Image 1 (tube, rainbow over the protein chains, first blue to last red):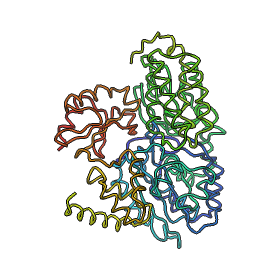
Image 2 (cartoon, rainbow over the protein chains, first blue to last red):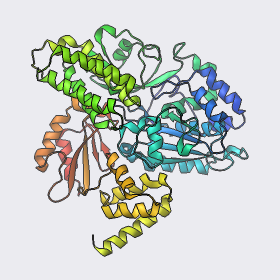
Image 3 (cartoon, chains in turn orange, green):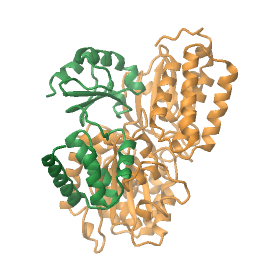
Length: 398
Length: 157
């Protein structure tokens, strides 16, 4: 595992393997939770649930058996920050999991690594082995009597929906990766029915830094409601695609300039399940209060056909819908059919408007985040690029 | 399946159950190990796993059918997957796909006659900054051009 020369204010700032673990064992659990609450860290997978709240709930749950789950099922199109973190900064992620184990009182942490990342498995397991040798995992970690914690890695098998936390838990339990009804939430009834905290790879990485440098330091970065920094996975039409660490509140136009994007027509924020932002709104800021994202930024220049982009997204959702609830299973198929009708110029505006209504129904009626967010790109692309899509007279190039 | 093959399979699954445990949560790791070795999970293996984990064989089939990387019918010795998601698509996936299809003489979803390669599409591989991306078994290749793709395929045994 080689480290590239990356620098950033928070995640990519200097960190020595194990330092947060060694510090945390001398702290009281409440103090760690206090630091986290002060940092206002929110879940980095995209949903943005306050991490301190989640951990406090699991820590307070009355059970002798608790679990830490690291969600490394990074399947959202356009997202690859977890790949970079796991390959180049495993110490941040695993130390963060050990800290979670200490605070919550869990004995086992499970990394759910997507099947497509199987090529990382060997190096990650080797890394865990070195942690065991250095007493950062195993029994009496860092000399703290009675603090036992270990981490195992479990592979996914190519199902996007398993990134949803309850579907992920189902998959860990050996079932089809179908989302559960919530409540009960995993903080009460998670893996094996025990209290479980499921956090994103990047969230654990942020925790390691917060333990060393404090919650107030973390708050110095970003905006009031979106503290800290975010890793953005930038891809598409630009000169320098890759992972960038930027403070929350960065404007889309600033990001575009940084990555060398020219003649940009649209930016898809948040992956296929996110929103498509047209040129006129590039002054919007990235953050939970405005353009929220799990980090996926896909850039499309003037030469791209937005209907083709939308079709690709809808094909993705039709394939990846798990099929257990009707709004998502049938809804996505209908939306894709609608896109194909537009492509062949065999549509009526009346029907397309009905499909937008259907999309809004899916957003409230679907069981999990997949069906609730899959209509986002359908609605936003047809709304923001209606002139291009409906005025081209049926001649759609690539 | 020959009796000899059946016995070997039973033995293999018994070892896997020893390694991963006989709880329901061990099911996916067991299936993944069989898939990795045999490139599919035969009916007989499903029955044996069901027996050893004490669950109904239908449950095993149900789980296999859910996951894109598990299958109940034989595939080629190597599975080649091309990312079809948007950024790889914009980076020229279509040309790579056509070149591979021409060279191998099969379409996506098919297996070569010599059983060497099964060709499939896959959704986002997380290599969006380096597309088009190709996954050969578990190894990933970034920035694949049509020419490079053929070169990679030619090296597969």
